[in-house]
Image (cartoon, rainbow, N blue to C red):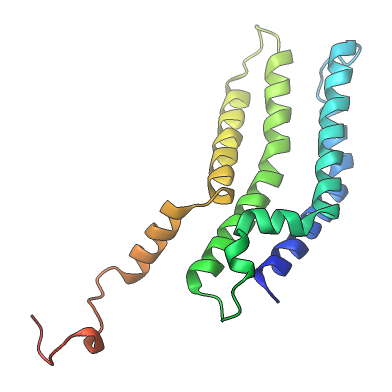
Length: 175
C-alpha cells in the first residue's frame, strides 16, 4: 500500500468514527443545561452539526485529494521504497488528524458552554477544559501541517549519544 492509500483509508475510518459519535455529540450539545429556547442557540447547534456532517462528507468522498494535500505530489511519484522520514511524516499527519477529530468537538462544546454560563457560576473547570482542548487543537494542526520540528526532535532523540558509524570514517582510528 502506498502512503496515499493508507491516508485515504484512514480518512474514511475517521469519517466512520465521526458518524458513530455524531449523535452523542449532538445530544451532549443539546442537553448541556443551556437554554435552547433561544433561536440563536438552536441555529448554532444546527450549524455545528452541519459543519461536522460536511466534514464527514468531505472525508468520505475526497480522501485521495486530502492525502495528496497532506503528503504532497513528490511522494506519489516515488517508486522506490519509502524512507523513514516519509513514514514519520505520514504518521504525524494521521495522529494530528485523529487528535483534531477528537478534540475539536469538545472544544466547541466547552466554548459554547462558557458563552452561555451565568456569571455567578464557577466556570473555572470549564475554562481549564476549554484551554486543554484548545492546546490539543493547536498541537493537532501543527502535526497535520507538517511537523518538521517534531521530526527533527524525534531523529535527534533516536540518535542522541551515538557517534558517527565507523564505516563513515576515512581511517580506522577515532579522531
